[in-house]
Length: 474
Image (cartoon, rainbow, N blue to C red; front, side, top):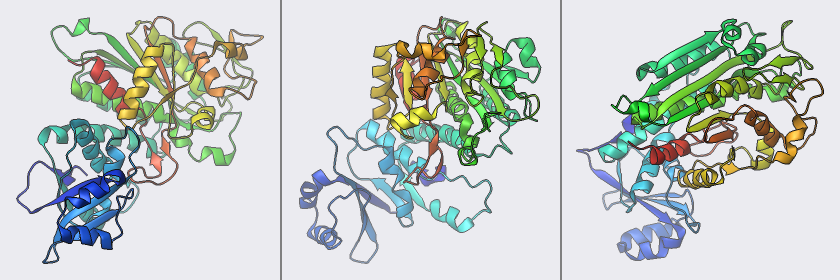
């Protein structure tokens, strides 16, 4: 709802005061007695999420006080504070009255927009609700507005893709979405469909997707920022898992586990959102985006447990479990990406339930061989309220992928360390990239919270864009 932010206004502006509990008494002592008494009557102490509207002597809204709760040792105002507020305010034009640094201001304004996301593609339009949402206007400067709009738009595209059911978001539709984004920025596009995948050397992508009535695809596009020295810019390659629906294949999932499998292309959605942000910002990189898009379906030609699949890298993989299909399509994509020896190779995937057991749904698992890179990424992710946490590429578990008939197995026979063994599998296909990051994410909000309704969530996008912007700024 971008109309809810403006850069100026002729209307009366209502100030919003953002108060941590720790600062409450000091702030209250600085206010007029009538304001202080009104807040005392409302039993307001800065409690997290509590909103108090203060009227003037004529009964009109004079100011808003918004509680942020107890301040953690290093906590700043972030987008989740902003996301929780707009839907709780009456109609009006508002301005932040609390002194914020640039980072806090950008976070809060992004939250104001981000928190008003709704996936209503399949609902009858509700004009009253839409009008009410657009009647709360925040006044902000042009630069902050543009930054918030770009981030929110990219993340909204990813959220829409993840939320769209597989009946509409087929591999073909996902490929089309990728092509549309690439075309906006004059990227060079290659697209392989169905049996073209075999001819082009993507046998595992074809094997996983061939049982579907919608043919598997691989989308590969490249972009540079068009500057005179762009060919000297470092290569950054993004790979996203695009399983548009996952039945588990012949190792079929129980029905309850299939309910969210429309989101199994969350890695691809996040990669597309990140690529759009990179290209809009014209970062000083040569960007490549690779998305294998498939449905893991069941039919007479479905790949089977015990099958041995060749891969683009020449390694043969025994299929220990057809429900470990994500790493199979990623291994061909990573092998393609690795040939260029990029400065940085990032893959994003809704890969394992084990990562959720270890870290829960809100914290994606980060794998990399570079300890300094991991530390930098985690630090940036915390500042952006877009967390990730490093898990080890523990070589002691590598033998879990052993096969008696092939170079490796796609699934460990052990019930332990599933996210680590999946990362170790992918690592086998990355040898030339100078730095490699694997992100195992959930891409879904399992519970309703302010700014995070149940549904798709583009995890790590904001954090990665912030990191790349710092590292590859023009």
